[in-house]
Image 1 (cartoon, one colour):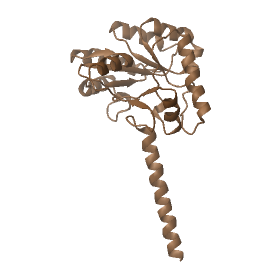
Image 2: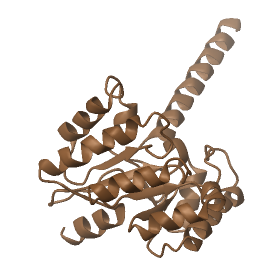
Image 3: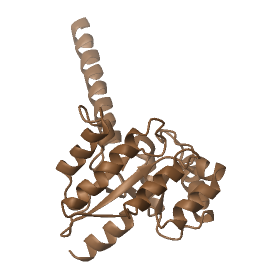
Image 4: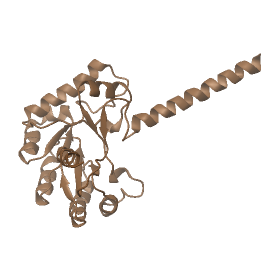
Length: 242
C-alpha cells in the first residue's frame, strides 16, 4: 500500500513538472498562442523586412535613434510603453512626426501573466489612448512585455481583435552574437529572409551598443537587396500578394 502511494505521488510530481515545463514553453513561444493571431514573421514574395524597436520613449534615447533612422531613410515600428508615453508625450509625437509606426507594449511593462481580464484591458486601453493622443492614427499592433503570454492575455487580445507581433531575429539576445555591434549586424545580415521581423532595444542603450549595431545593420541588409518597412507595411504588402 505504501509503495502504491509513493508511486502515485511520484507520478503526480512528474506530471506537475511536465505541465509547468509546457506552460513555460507556451508562455515564451514566438509563433504560437492559445487565442488570436500572433505574427513572428510574414511569408513574403518580396524582399521586405520590418525593424521593431522596444521600450521608451526616453529623453536620452529618442533623438539619437530618430537621427540614425533618418540618416538611413528607414521607417520602423516603435513598441512603446504607455507609462513612458504619458511621461514624455512630446517624444512620442516626434516619433510619429518622423513617419514611424507606434505599437502597444503595455502600460507598465510588467509580465502580463496571471492577471485579471480587467487589469489586462487597462494595460492595453491606457496605452492605446496614450498612442492616439500622440497623434498616431494607424492600426496599433501589440507586443507583450518580455514576449510573455499564456492564456488570459491571448484571450483578451482576441476579444479586442488585436494582433500580437513578436519577432524572428533578436541579435542582442542571441548567444555568441551580442558581444559586439559588428557581430549583431553580421548575424542579422546573414540570417535575414523575406518577411523577417527584427527586434532591438535601441532606446534604452546607455553604451550605444545597439544603436551602433543598427547603424551597421541597416545598410548591410539593404545591400543584400532588402527594404526596411514598418510592421503594418509588411503585413499589408505581403498578404495582399498571396
